[in-house]
Amino acid sequence: MIFLRAAGIITEYNPLHAGHLHLLGEVRRLLGEDTALVCAMSGDFVQRGDFALLRRQARAAAAVRGGADLVLELPLPWAAAPAERFADGGVQTLLGTGVVDTLAFGSECGDAAALGRLAAALLSAEFPPRLKEELGRGDSFAAARQRAVSGLLSPEKAALLSSPNNTLGVEYRKALLARNASLEVLTVPRRGAAHDQVSAPPDRNASASAIRSLLRQGRREEALARMAPAMAELYRAEEAAGRAPVFGENCERAVLARLRCLEEADFAALDTGREGLYRRLYRASRSAASVEALLAEAGTKRYPRARLRRMVLWAYLGLRPGDFPETVPYLRVLAANERGRALLARMRKTSSLPVLTKPAAVGRLGEEARRLLEWEARAADLYALAYPDLSAAAGGSLWREGPAML
Image (cartoon, rainbow, N blue to C red):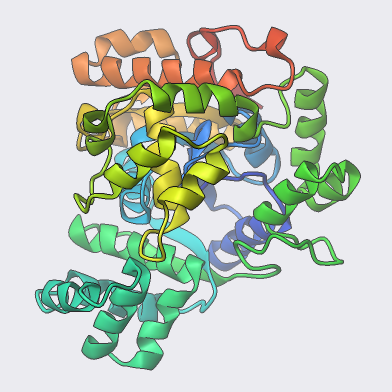
């Protein structure tokens, strides 16, 4: 199969909705209908430190049915990580294919050049001392960063950092600059509800957060109507199999039990900021009767809730930042269509990373890769304990399931 270009998208599809389909369609419209689309997608756990609504295989299959050609997994150490690490892992994955020539993403501003200027400012030598000074005021990291950038550019340009998709786009551009990567950058103006808007609008352009909120409220049909058609179909199949919806609270007692078994030093190993946040989380874990109560007790305006959630998630999974490799060691295939299989054939010659289609083959890739996939397998088993039907939660699923070839 012939394709002239290949664009990469870093994503979660939690779940796939109309806004995601719009981005996929716009990338093809702008780059050409023969453009192949490669997704680097989070697995069973997502960037905000939460369980994905559906397991990775279902979400990857929905992505291919919705317009993507090849879905590669963004490994757990980068998927459930701060925005900077999340973006860098996604960029590493796409660069590793050797076929992707364009990085595409949605943003509130739709201005790739403006996001590039912000990225350059954040990587400049003048930025760290300004940030340190602003952090001394006691505000959140996000507020301090925006004020520091205002001093380098302008308040108007720095204000772009107040929007979540712009911020993630800046991190993508930072990762490309830091790795001296030559990928073109295409950003499409975001359409529909805001990224983290929990209320569902009357039309079908709801955010993923709003769709998950509808499901939590028991408003199943409304949620399904706002998913992409392929996603809704696969959701029904996963639901019938007892594997959906998956919410972190389904494992709440297991999470709290795990936290109460940890010592203060274990929490310290999770606190990459070295700001003493681990002490607050440790103290809260001794008495909190719910994860939300734990987060409320440990949190302050300086620390975003997502950072605390990630620390809790990593504690539950038995992971520590120091356990994992600095760079992505392989490309694990989750789903592909005919064009995706043609991409895989081309990647045999172009990829700078080994391509993994059969989990058992990881043994040939070295100790670092094997250890990472073993951690992934254990995390998948713990994820399955959040299935509504525990009879569907047999362990070892990662080793048994290959990619969805559609």
